[in-house]
Image (cartoon, rainbow, N blue to C red; front, side, top):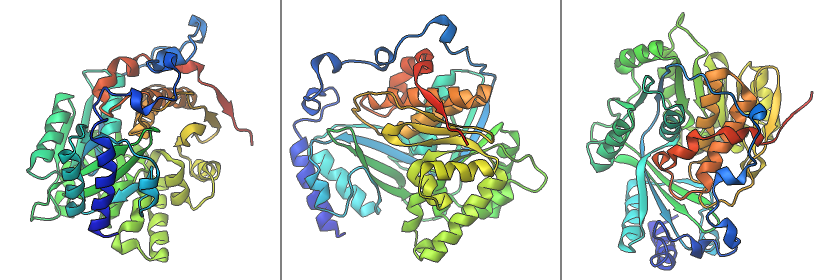
Length: 421
């Protein structure tokens, strides 16, 4: 798509949005919601429990968690558009679209000139998941580390300072491009139906070469769990880098694989050929099988990774590899599994205001319980609850939701069902 068409798209969208997108102006977007439900919160939307049914207090022993990812500065805008503005372009509403710096700067400049307010903060799947997990656990003795690269610019400093304020360490990797490209960012356009369409510029990328191995290897050895992310596999060197970090003889099966970004591999020049992409996915899947403990992602990501046609088929493939995890399915809830059992967990029946980051919140809720007690049913329910906290709120900054995220007792009321053989 040409830059001109993209610009026209934004001019049309933002012309309708300029006078109706303040952070607190919710009513114009949800006029079809009954008056009594407009200010409802998640806690009142799920039945209260008796003491005998309630979740036991999780055993949050100190946790050392690290992960390698690509950092993004998230900028979330509420736009008052109708689907036609997306349908008339190559952009699919609710999708993720990779763009270059020129395009994303044009988009951001157009939004700013229209005075459309935004909510900004450190983003990307792993970073949001870590931030939410940190809030849920609320343990000052935890040690969380994000390993990534940012440029020396406002967005980069915002990411580092934002994480520091939440007691999450930022371990900076050397950049791949010595020309110091700008820090990556993601513009998220949230439409009246609560769906989000994301435009992502990867920006400054980490240099995954052997000269940078030792500090990461030490963090891996010292961590209880180590997170990796689908987005990072867009760099063909990432897989080889991980194989060296996880040297032969070191402790394995403490990797948490977040599959976000797997569909973006098709945008990489090295993988545009169908056979090359298929081979790359097979190598990633084999690495996950040999080294991971948990796999967490959504249905489309994990169907693509496992070359299957349904979330259940993907689950069976992963389960047969000895893995545990969670596969989210939007309004249909999630499938959670370990190496012996598979369950479905329902999604809370809520009016969505903004689905941005819902999968990341779900991942964090799942991890909080799985790490503490290894109970996949409760993990799935706390994941569903945490995602619910997100979708009924405007803005994807976890610090806005501390009280609700930590008050997850009512998650036990979320239905679940075992899938029999």
